[in-house]
Length: 127
Image (cartoon, rainbow, N blue to C red; front, side, top):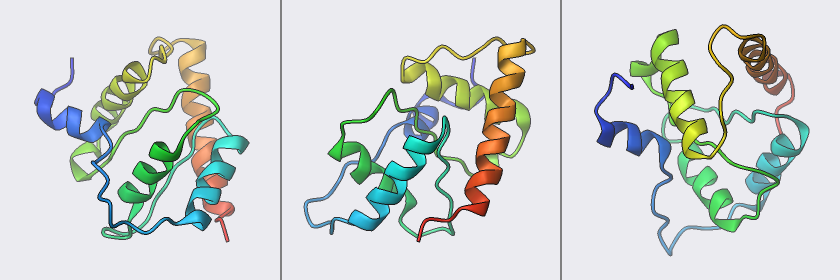
């Protein structure tokens, strides 16, 4: 069970409502598409206010996707392994993805893929 209130967890897992006045950003959509096609995990990172949440919401709204999409917004509160993994598990479950059991070979492999995917993303920024 998550250690944060259910409404807060729901907000971390749900994309925001899109406003009609938003400008489409095809280059960013292509970057997200490229990340999704190249790996199991796509991490979108940037400074506060850069538009990460809105960009992902626009990409999600455009669909279709090659598979289930789990979305999780992270902040300073999530800066502990226990909270991070519980919230990620909740995001995966909400997307219909059954996470591997903690401590299992599959769980360790998934954690390794997440770490490798983040390292690879840091090396391959989208132009």
